[in-house]
Length: 245
Image (cartoon, rainbow, N blue to C red; front, side, top):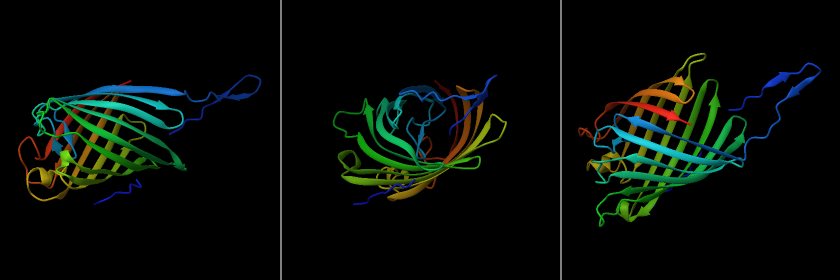
């Protein structure tokens, strides 16, 4: 059995008053609701297309408590994906918070559910995750691990995924850049999917333009080291538009 241990801001606004300085000491809201929608030219998950290389959509919603606990659900259109499903739902729950100055810990568990898959085909699976997120100058860095234990949908096997991500925003600019590299060992790897081994690497690099606080567009190059199959594991450029609230 493989296992994984994943050891992977604030604005203080001082407002001068006429008689004396005062500061905004309002506590953060007890509950915060967020969400959004995204349109993608291809839905790629760890380098693998889950929309058969076609346009896909995503919608999500999340509820976060002031203590750091959160829960939410994401939904993707995956028509034509290897799971032969129509929709992918990902409910998740976890906790994130500061553990050191400029360093946060994020731990939780997600379940991926495929709607429209043949009844006799086991496709749903659980995957706990953990990440360490830090800020270094203008860069936001993330080291993560996700581990899916033995399950019927994984052929009674387990899967380990390790990842490293970096995001850098240009000062006084709507542009930001990000890069990702991941390593998968198990039946969820692109190599296992195409019968070319049990483990491999995926990567991506992209640029995002922030039109408005709630609206952005992104262009990224996505690839992996598995044999390239058109619309499944081939390297590609993915464009997306995201609206957040």
